[in-house]
Structure formats: C-alpha cells, structure tokens
Image (tube, rainbow, N blue to C red; front, side, top):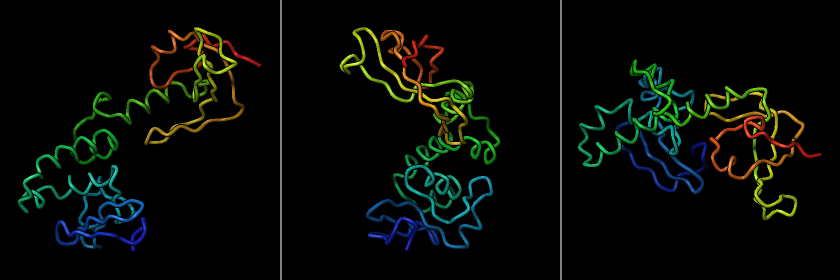
Length: 190
C-alpha cells in the first residue's frame, strides 16, 4: 500500500527503488535503506516520491546506479529530472549541486519572486472578458484578493475581502502571470 492507494503496477527500477502506479497517482517508493541513502538535500520526509515532480529527486540522487543499469533512455530521463529539480525544487538543487539556479531556470522561483514582490497588494485571481454581462467592451473584469503570503512552491495565500474591478483589455493582455490591481490601474467596482 502507498499513500496513493494500492498499486496497479510495480516495477523495481533498482534494488530498493520501485516505480508504482495506482488508479489515482504514483511515483517512486524507496526502501528504508534507499531512503536513508538519499542525499539530505534531496530526501523527503517520507519514502514516497510522487510522479509529477518528486520522482526527479530519486533519479538525480541515484543517477550513477541508474546509468550503470543500462536503460537506453536514461540520458533523457536524467536530463528531464535535472530540469525538473531546478524548476520545481531550486533550493534543493542548490543545496545538492552547489550551483545557483537562476530565475529563468525555475518556474517556481520566478512565480514566487513575482508573488513576494506583491505581498500586501491586491492581485488578480480571476478575470472575465466582455462576454460577461457586467464587463463593457474593451475592458476585462477582474476579481482579486490581498496577497498575504506565498510558500516555497509559489502557492499564494490570500486575505479577504474580495475586490472587483474593471481594467483596460489591452493592458490586461500584456500582463505578467502575477499582477496587482495597481499595476493595471484597476477601477474598483462596488
């Protein structure tokens, strides 16, 4: 049994490292020995490394053994794993490889920095085109909340109340992924 449920398929990639697939999710499951052997910078608290992002930590940690196992696609897998760790777990990569991850290499770092720069401001969370009955032509209707914080994966936390506004469509179309009402010169609605 895994945290994702009962495995449908289980493949041992290396001794003590299993790739599992369940009806809902999957990833790598490590034995106690393998979990203990994970470099501290890459080790999670639990021995289960989901297949969206955390699988990459296992590939990077045991890359020498995976390469020696002779999988003909391992070079591609290692390249993808390295990019995934840099993009989604930049601090872990920096601690492991002693190599700085630039914002351009990390989606999470770029998003987190964008949110951090706007903490305390009202940021757009939802938008409606002029197809909505309350949005005039040439405008975009937006809803937003005051940004309270952002976590290490660039997931924001917002504070009530909700704000509603209109912004210029052309300006909205040019926006960055995270943008405040002030940056859009939003016209607050009641």
